[in-house]
Length: 330
Image (cartoon, rainbow, N blue to C red; front, side, top):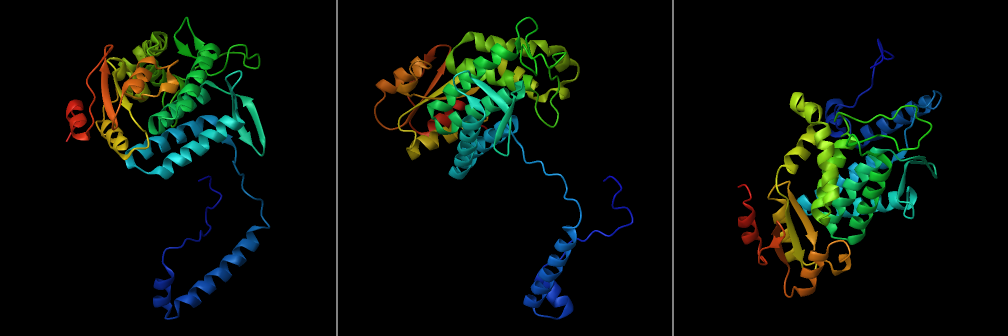
């Protein structure tokens, strides 16, 4: 890549032990032993050269994206191990890089040390991961923490005049000029992720100021979206969702019931990004009073309630009916 191997040979394994045994007409076990012996010699020679750099830091933002992917994958594939991995990662980040009293995040953990004040991307990506974890597990603490982080992010990073999230917090004297991300490249920008997050949080909680935050951010980048939409594909998704009235699906009943899992899978499979999934959990009455009220009154097997514009339809208890109501693509 940088010319250091020009004119040199690079060893590469292209055949299996069995194929080599057939080529040289020797037992496969002898091939394996010979290769192990050769590898030991190569490794011994390698120990006399400088080791390559090792990047073993743990970043909050990157883990937030991973948590999101694992949580969504667990829903789509029905694979519990993915959800467990997402929960382990989230617990690690919150235990080592999050201060629940102040609501602040740190950015990096390495070799037992947590350091560096969190950037907007750290908050945005972790909030996304926690929202997806709540959607996959219905554990209320994921939602509570996502809301707490969103409030902190607004306080520390949002420019109320311009409607954009700066990358660094207010009051950071180490940065002479506050900048903000304005493109989605190898990693989505903090502004695009945040726009989606606040749309979701506004629809979940009914707090209009959260939705307004998302709309102001989308508006800030409207000229870029019109002139060069490929620069901000995730923000384009946010603008599409913002133009569609949100649809809440409140699931009532035991979240561990297989019937509940079938209903949730059906909702996810409808591929409608404006859908917001909520559990009718009485323990979330302070955040989701309408959902909690459904949880108190619902009896019987798991069911789904479709809610829009402040009213809910009668309970749906079978996946086929829910699929028909949502108009899932075939």
